[in-house]
Length: 123
Image 1 (cartoon, rainbow, N blue to C red):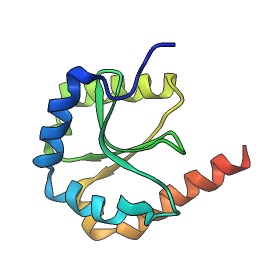
Image 2: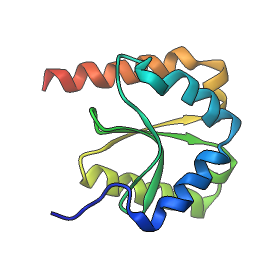
Image 3: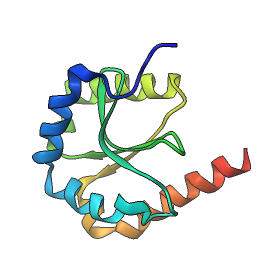
C-alpha cells in the first residue's frame, strides 16, 4: 500500500506553515484543537500525497481549507481543483471556507463539521 500521509520530504515545510499560520488559521485552530468540536481529532498542516491541508480529521477523512488571497486567481483555483480531485479519489471530503467565515460565522463552520459527522455515521 502506498503511503499518502505526512511524507518526510514535506516535514519541514509543514512545520514552517504551522509556525507561520495565517490569523484565520490560528483562530480556527483554537476552535478545532483538543477535540473541542464533536469530540473529533483534527491535525493542522497535514499532508496527503503532495498536498498540505490546512486542517484534517482522520476519523472523518475530512479536510478543511481556508481560502484567502493565495487561493485567488485562475492558477490557484486550478491547483485547488486538482487537490480536491486527488482528495476525493482517496476518499477525503474537503470543506472550503473563506477566511472571513472564521471570524464572522464560526458556528456555521462547526455546524458543517457536525453535519459531515452525522452523515458519515449513517453510512
